[in-house]
Amino acid sequence: MKKKIILLSCLATSLLLSGCLDVTEPQRMYYVDGLGIDYKDGQYEIYLQLINFTNVAKSKTSNPQAVPAEVGQSKGKTLEEALFKLFRSIDQKVFWGHMTYIIFSEEAMKNKNAISVIDSVLLYRETRYQIWTYCTQDSIKDILLITPILNKFLRSSKLSTPLDTDDQETFVEPVNFRNLVIGLNEPNHEIGIPYVTINKNWETAEERGQDTALTGVGVLSKDGFKGFIKNDAARGMQWMHNRTHRGEITFKLGDNETDYLTTTLEKIKVDIKPLVKNDQVTFEVVVKLNATLNGFKTNVSEEELRKQIIKEVKKEIRTTYKEALAKGIDIYRLSEHLYRKNVKVWKKLEQDGKIPLTPSSISKLEIDVNQVNSGRETFTGTINE
Image 1 (cartoon, rainbow, N blue to C red):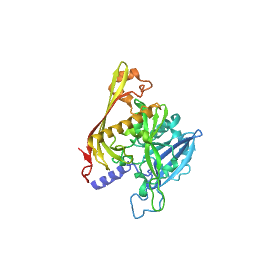
Image 2: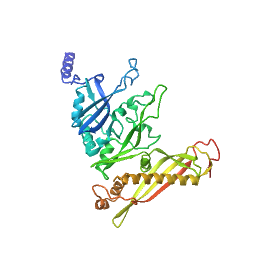
Image 3: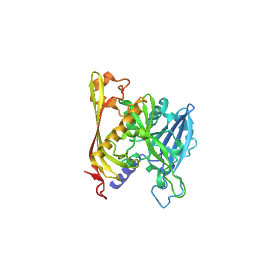
Image 4: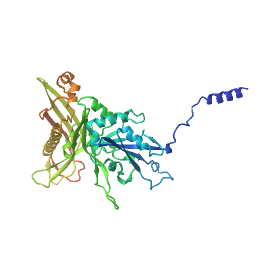
């Protein structure tokens, strides 16, 4: 009798359990990895990158001929309209929870278009704040169709995993949705979004390959797009925050036009101190770093190396600052440093979240080279003590 009661109780309680009949099987969904946004003739033009997981697990049933991704394209007066038009040509459910990055064209960054797109993406329940953000002036469709070096899986591409190469070089700091929202909501209400270009430095025996490179930033503010800072003009940014793991500078040694030296700079620590005098604010900047030498042609003293490193780092920081200032950009977020350390003065001086800056606002720029390492000592006499 007891056994019958237990059996009936189990059957009765099982009726209360929820089923999974409404759950879509993983193989019956398409997965978004990247989203591209352009804006032309008053309409949003979107590019949706769907990735193929067929060969990820390297199973016996994997298909080496399977395409790594497909890119769909659609237009609409709003982002949502363009997406719904694209959905009409998709034969399975689209899952957004694995989306890793979004890339904006120059036109999509202007006139607050990017702000409205970011709001729309964040409002959707499947998306996350870890989505990486980029901008470009190249063809978005071409960027989304690029396959990583050695035909690796798209989820390991530079745009999907920008932190994987951080220990090699941190030329541009990656920015995700969380960083972007914080940057726009707090002084100086600007954020530098990594600028993407198509790189053609790689090739195989059969064809010339392509990959992506981060070569600068496009600066977005709460009021719209401020402009690009690219290539050599952007080099100073890497020396002005503590998140740079590694970078390089190359400079000429002596008067010989062919004698150049590249040094690797690491362990960068930045201290920015605002000084207030008679309702005027200036900033003292101290950058501490270590240097490692990467090859010589001539003997050189450590003191000479220190002077050259200091000279080049100062030059790059000043160049980027002046380039940004000409476009009304507070590239080093000096307004935020004053806000954090003296909010009373910041409130008095700020204009729309920023304080007025001039070329002389950085009153002191000190570069301290803590160590100069020669690296592996294959030959003697390369550094004169």
